[in-house]
Length: 419
Image (cartoon, rainbow, N blue to C red; front, side):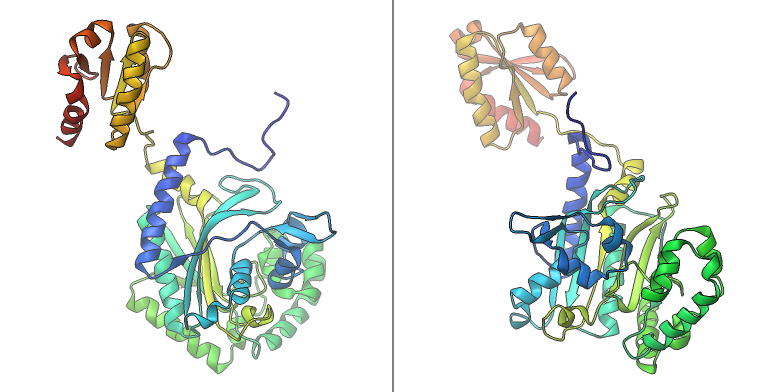
């Protein structure tokens, strides 16, 4: 074949698409129960939006974004994550004037040029959730409870939630300076990327997965020792509320997430049903991003669920069955096919799944097709049936059949299915 699927991309075929539909339906049900409204945004944005909000020294911006220039020379990017563009839409459309707190969700594809792995593709999908307008720890706790409940509702088990506080503009500079001093003493043990990051954006070294860097960071100063009183109080209240909600959690002082815009609370949820790449959801607070992108000073928090990883788990526990026809019309002859087409439309008009054999093939061939599609009933129409104004309804499980008057067929099948 001349054209093949691009590396790192994935065809979602009908058998798998059913699971996607179930996941999306359950997610929408939970999110709308919690008062969230859907927002749909384009996959293409100015590249500068992501560079500015995510951070130039992050792997996403420096290595993974799909960027190109259009006919006018503008640098554009396929979105690598959703929070930045939700904020862009919030600011541009002045949603702050419509409601004091906006609760928004987005479901769709993201794009990153990274090494394909199990459950991770270069086009991947996320359920992205954002609360904009409230700075309090109750909103943090509500967000964690929602993420936990959402994953449970979807059917993900073996969950662990890790949390940390990344501080704020008052306390993080001191920590940053102390971390830089520490990293300078470990420079030779760090990989080239971390050597570069240690001066430009030292918190990013915690993102590194190389064992040498992990070992070098084992005695690194932790940000919790540098939190200001306000951040300490905020983080303590979040933990108290999570205990009240009976959400089990662990504190991970090395958790920084991979984006620069996070402040204060950050979290990640993992599942023991996955391998090394076990994160299924993550997010945190980003109180400065909206004003940083030209909007009003509004605090915010959000998270995203990786849909491919969630589906990897669901495939292990859910049997996938394609919807099969309630009735398959086998029509023998031209007049029968015309009548069959009319009945096909009538069945579907009554929400009865119906298919028919369109080709002029034998009854045996069409019944094989009905069986292959796992149809519950086969409706047989030929010249003899038309002359008597009847049709034969065959039960495909028992091979028994019943003669029905043509204008009573649709109502009779509907009653059978209702029973």
